[in-house]
Length: 80
Image (cartoon, rainbow, N blue to C red; front, side, top):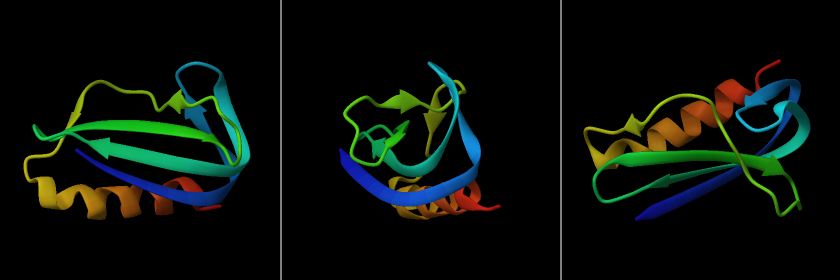
C-alpha cells in the first residue's frame, strides 16, 4: 500500500461526498492498495476529519501510475 499527500489552495472549491463543496487550504491524500484500488480523500490543512471525493471505485491498471494520477488530480483541483 502506498500513500501520497499534497497541500494546495482550492479557490473554487472541491466537491466531497459527505459535506458538499469545501475550499481554501486543503490536503489531498491518495492511497493505492496492492490491487490498484485508489482511495481519494481530502481535508482542511491541519484538520482531523477526512472527506471522500465523489465517484465509484477507482482502480489503476498499473501501480506505477499512482504518482502521476495523484499529481494530476492535485493540479486539477487547484486550478482557478
